[in-house]
Length: 111
Image 1 (cartoon, rainbow, N blue to C red):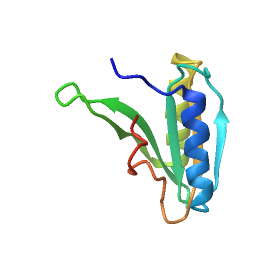
Image 2: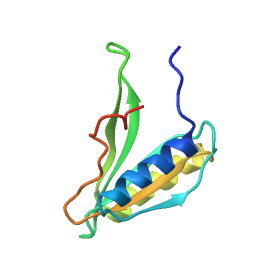
Image 3: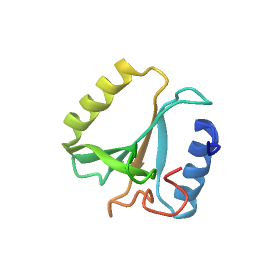
Image 4: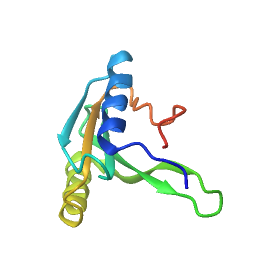
């Protein structure tokens, strides 16, 4: 079994990458420091948003970020709120970038 980073460590590293790229981001919900799941909400500041979560591909064994919800920001926020009801250990990071950058496609962030 491959070792995994703690959620807290991954979140801090991700926020550092965003800060170095001058992309504002905030933790809007802090989950379990060790094993919490992470959702990333990307807002281009135009009343829309996209929420991403990590998914595991059973055929390849790879983990990848996939879209959980996309559309009007209130609808995406409602989806995130429902997820938080099911998982109180959920981390939510909000990334605000007019160009839509989130860096989740960069190497090392799928783990």
